[in-house]
Length: 582
Image (cartoon, rainbow, N blue to C red; front, side, top):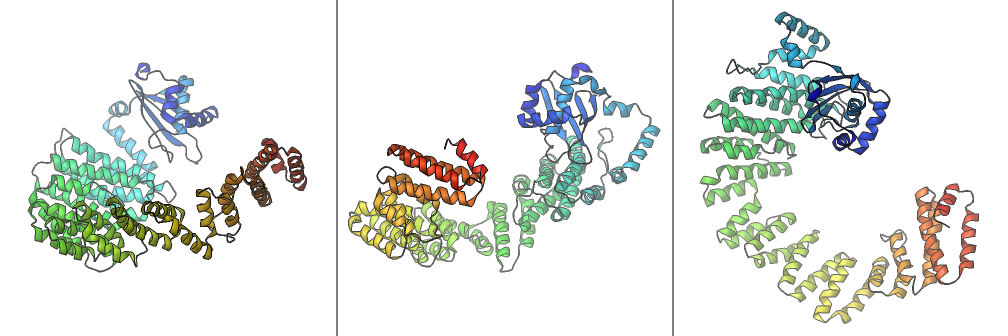
């Protein structure tokens, strides 16, 4: 058995668990945290004493090219790439003789008599009584053909997993692991082409998870992954189950139940492949039945939630009935379910332009933005533009104006684009808006007249922070120094702007720049804290460099000596000053 595991080294181990986990794993290995290491065929196993009271179970299997798969029962060990697996692999690399050899599990079990196996199972159940539910489940057997399957037995296993999963932050991982073992039976039924048995297992497990899903947080998505396994298995049953009507109906019903749960839960992506599998594998007659289920599930209320659900169901309904829907039926479903985008798109395709505009006008601001793109796709952007012009007057969504402005620019209608950009800038003054108005005004030859009016208006309104940005952008250092000192205390514009002014002023107004740097450095020092001291030193470094450029080293020497004297009781500041060479 020694030749079943290929030689390994630190590099392959590092490639598997990562350099950091290799380093951490070595500390575990060297502290004798690996317990009862075993070699079994092409695998090594053991336990690792980690941060939890119960040690973690470890398993690493090797293939011809090295490590093939691994697992650890720790919270992050599902893929077997954690520090505990690293510790086990290091133990195998450096102390292989410590691993006791055990026979393959199947070989050990085959060597036991029936009475011994019965006695062994009884002993195991004494240790883990909850495993008794496993005895109620049918096991796939290629020698017995189709096996009667009791779905309740599998649902009880799922309920047991949730009941025993605990309530800590890794509870969902434990539950998903235990349910995954139950779900393996479905995969084995499927491998034996027992689609009826497999479908029952997938259905029972999926229903059991949905019944308990809201009782346990699933932030890591482990339970969702198990549901996805059920969905995939049900799809395989539909693909390979032939014409067994009962099997097909059960599979389709379960896929719909999963889809409906996700829609009602808010569309979190639980079993997200379910609708596609129904569309792919259902016959036209079956799609008709599913459409009936959709209509029965669709809410009739007027709340936002009801509207969301109707839209979700409506889109699926359109997909299900697409092959035989005429235009009127399609439009009827769109109106019934509030599918405004689909409705307008079809109306435009039919040339019913006035109807499309009327329907678009009924949409909200966000809807109108999407609908505008649909009109544009059909080459009818001009038809929707009056709606946007009207909506812009009352809407707080600037994207509507942006969309309309871009259409004007595309068509070279710069006067209209400038008018809209100016209105947007008046509503929300900001530098990017100013630059756009400037560029459009220059293109139209009106910037020389409009710029003074705009800046005077902002000055009267006290928009000194914005004016400072404008002056910096346009290289007017004198004006930026004046305006930055007029900003309101606590305004949006912060220290970063002051520093940008100082940087811009360093060449032509060094004394002003020195004042800003020194003022900010002192403020940071007064605020205390290692990070503040480090930033203060960065500003003082600029002060030093400016005085050197001005050939005033003696002035700098007095300043830094004064800083050190005033703050001599701050050892952390002294360390940062020394580190910065100050």
